[in-house]
Image 1 (cartoon, rainbow, N blue to C red):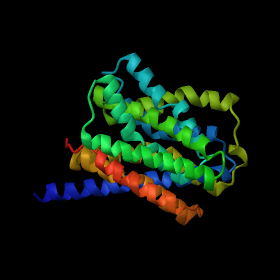
Image 2 (tube, rainbow, N blue to C red):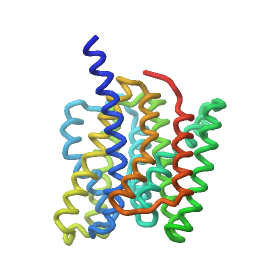
Image 3 (cartoon, rainbow, N blue to C red):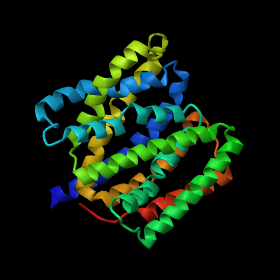
Image 4 (cartoon, helix red, strand yellow):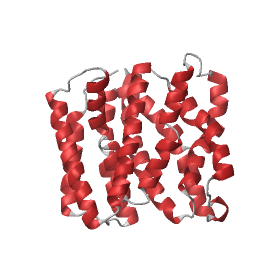
Length: 294
């Protein structure tokens, strides 16, 4: 009984740790613009440094067993450079707060669309209501960004939405194929490191040699290890101990967390309209969560 209670609390702790990890990742990715590093450098760190840890683990567990070549190719592409370069490009145009709003925030919308198209599953009234709130909030936030953050902020928002589309596809495939953590790490990290790093080293622009040591180390540690490896382990533990529904409910705090850290750390401003829309978005996320446990 004590072990069960302890595991329960550790699951909630892991879920809230993910909120902080992802919220702070938005800030770290936003300030990368001032470090001299290019978005291609950030992608190289994401795949290359994580592969240093992932390769020994994959050689031990051999996660490619049970995966078809087409599955490896598709999953690697979805989690690959195209996806992450769209996301990093979004931070060149839009505030950090918008990363959480337009990546994490719109995931339930894509989940409903994929459910309708792929498995012919009609959304529940609860999901429709939540999705309506999310969509309305996102439109208001996008409009307000053009007014308060500059005419090009919508470009960053669009890039974030494309990133959310990729990530939603990953969620659908991981559920349909019942993928394990090591299989995801293998496709998302090792395969992409092998494919992307030579291209980056030979042809893509880099600011690695001239970047200040402090910002370089921050980006290396956070982009290379924290979201890809630590975040994945936290998600796996939280989903296993407290269920997908509870985990998703807590992750609804990511857009708000990113916005709050953007204000506190970067000095980004949120208008009253944006604050109201952000609250509405969070409510929509909570409503749209499917309450089920593992």
